[in-house]
Amino acid sequence: MVGDVVEFSGTLVTARDKAHQKLIQIYRNGEKPPFDLRDGAVIHCGPIAVRRDSGWEVVSAGPTTSYRMEEYTFDLVRDTGLRLIIGKGGMGRKTAEACRRYKAVYCVFTGGASLVAAQSVKSVENVFWLQELGMPEAVWVFKVEGFGPLVVTIDSEGNNLTEEVVEKAKRRV
Image (cartoon, rainbow, N blue to C red):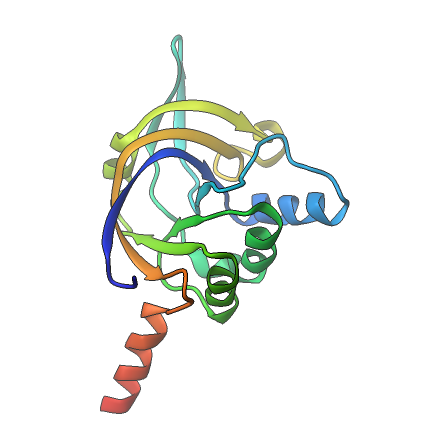
C-alpha cells in the first residue's frame, strides 16, 4: 500500500539508463539477458565499487533519479516479471500502470544516503557489461540485507503517492 515503509533483503540488481536501453533491445530481439529478473528487484543506482583481493566492495550505492527510466519501465516489467523497483523521486503513469497490470511496486530510497545503502550490500554476486557500459551503468547483482527504509510510492494496484501529493497540492493552491 502506498505510504508503507519497508526494507528489502535478497538479490538486488542495479540498472540505470544505459542498462534499461540495453535490456529493452535484448528483449525486442527475442533474446534473454545473462541474468534473470523474474520476480526480482531492481534499483536505479550507479554504485561505486572497489576491487579487493576478496572481490568487490561497494562503497556507495545511492539511487539515481528514477523518472529518467519512465519510458522503459513498462516494457521492462512486462518482459521480465520484475516485482520491485527501487529508486529516487517519483515515477509516472506508465510505471503505475505496469505496477497495476503486472503486480509490481515502486519504492523510494532517500537520496543522499548512498553510504547507508552501501552498508546493506553484503556481497557482489556478479557484474555484467562493466567494460561496455562502465562502472555506474553496468548491471551489478548484490545480496542485500535490510535495504531501506523504502517508502512504497507506487503499489501493485497502481496507486501513485507522488501523483496523490501533486493533486492535493494543486487543490490547495
